[in-house]
Amino acid sequence: MPKGKHLRLKDKVVIVTGSGAGIGKSIAEVFAAEGAKIVAGSRREINGQPVVEGIIDAGGEAVFVKCDVSEEAGVKKLIETAVSTYGGIDVLVNNAGVNFVKPFEKVEPADWDRVINTDLRGTYLCSWYSVPHMLKRGGGSIINITSVHTLACLPGAAPYDAAKWGIIGLTKSMAVEFASRKIRVNALSPGLIDTQIWDDIQAASPDIDECLSYWWSNIPAGRVGTPKEIAHTALFLAGDESRYTTGANIVVDGGMTSQLISQEPYQSKSLEGKTRE
Image 1 (cartoon, rainbow, N blue to C red):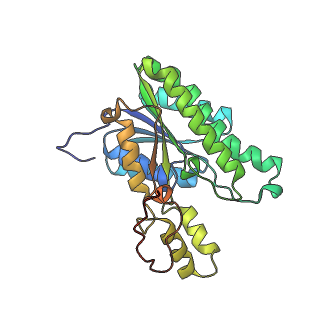
Image 2: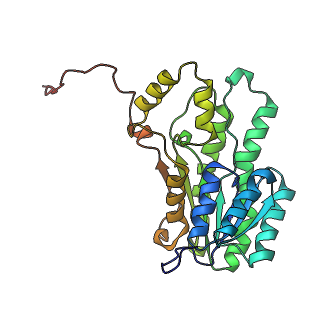
């Protein structure tokens, strides 16, 4: 870990779910570099354990727990490991989730249950089991990683959209309930980020140039975001700088949800606007 600088999360105990790749991996690494003790949860040990080993090799503290957040027993083990290893919980990052795209009429009840149970129920379970330990520490921060789907939707994502909007409701309800007890609860909604999802989008496109042109026309910044950019926003929500921030949904999307429609594929003439009499 870096020497000679102020560590923003020094000795804070942080649980990060879905930490085996992408955004979760970056959050675990960035938080560890700021002095946090990381409890990294992931469904696959082959993904999660190397993240922990990398943190340890860099001089940090971390432990891996194999955990499917949709299953209560796994969540209990995750929380118990954090408490038994490091003595408590200061920050919870609910990052684990599954992406989902399928036409609504083809969505089976099993599909619905899988997405809702991982994305929404998993967020509830991890939060529910963490809150008592945060209260013992005098407060804490819960960061729910959601999506720009909490502001607008795409066709074929009904279970995913329902889960992410549900997380926003849970975030705001908990924020109001626990503000007086110094537990802050916020949501962080990434746009298109350079993770496996972006790789899958490109692989599914018959023409990569058309794919890029389409997405760049929908992202004013003209690029996808990086997992580390999301991690640094999460770092703000985890640290003392955000102690008056709770119940928020912070969007990090390169302007995607601020744009009304895609840019015109031609140069429009100026529209000065006439005053209506």
